[in-house]
Amino acid sequence: MKAVIINGSPKAQDSASELIAAYLQARLAQAADCSVCHAARYSRDEIMRAFTGCNALIFVFPLYVDGIPSHLLRLLDEIQNSVADVASGAAVYCVVNNGFYEAHQNAVALELMGNFCVRSGLRWGQGLGVGAGGMIAAAPIGRGPLKNLGKALDALAENIRNNKTADNLFVKPNFPKFLYNAAAHMSFRAQARKYGLKTKQLYDKPRQ
Amino acid sequence: MSGALILHDLQQSEAEQFLPKDTAKYSLFAAAPAVRHCMGCFRCWFKTPGRCVIDDRAADFVALMSKHEELIFLSRLVFGGLSPDIKAVLDRSIGFVLPFFRKLNAETHHVPRFDISPLYKYIFYGPEITDREKETAKKLAVANALNLGSGRCFVSFFSSSREGMEALT
Image (cartoon, rainbow over all chains, first blue to last red):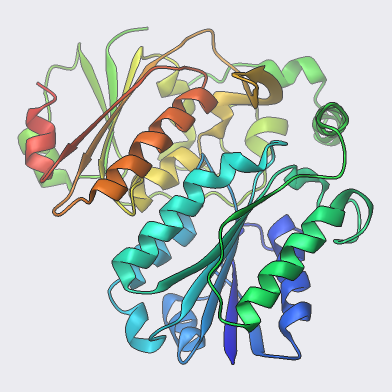
């Protein structure tokens, strides 16, 4: 089988989506010809060439303003009428991660992707909502705080290999919400310091 | 604080012809031609709070939002959500809220940067909008309004941009 993973993070590197994409690619490598395309770095034509003949299109992206990042949305909008011509019968799988603890906040983005499938004539495979995205770089996927994420991605990879459709899953992190929120706030303060700002300056109001 | 800010994705000629001209009541922001996409650096939170570091016209959108009590998104409906042009402006405007978290309706959301609670109006247009897409759009508006510091939103659908604009006045 042939599968393409589309990394929909606008970040050039070091994104949670990149880590998830690499994990999935490793899980699919033995059973599939599986490549990763970075949507922000590839042209629409390059991506359409990569999609040609695919059985599975796997979109991995961060939640942006409750939806799909605009560069990826633009790509989907542009290819909706032609993608089924090059990847006829392909199933779409999707992993959306967000910075809040609750995975279910990704549900609307999965619906948007489902609607893309209906418009483009592709088949919906399965969606995964992943909360606490800030932790994904903190440990190897499948271990410790990311144990449930590993299990969910393994199940998704199994469904992709078997060309199966399954219910969407929302992954509960293996650590408590208060700890995640405290760690996130610490990292916000650290990032402000990196740019020479004090925490209180993060509250500044911009002037036009 | 006054009036409504209309973020729209119309072509210039259409906007000039049909959008309201009462500048005391409405401010207009054209999402087309498209602004640059967010690059995910989060410097609008940590380096230049409230302002995107990409120096184009979208960088001032947060400041503009903060001066209006109503925000109107006049957008082609795409998969049950906002169009890429509108979304590009909004992705660049997360500085409207702070990075910090708060609990709201038993969920995590961002703390508002400004002491305002705007009404968000979504005017979606497009031919052959499906019921399924309408349902997604309503959920999106509720989620956006919460994450953008307000619980207030209103969603309507029209078969053309012209009809959507007429509903404004």
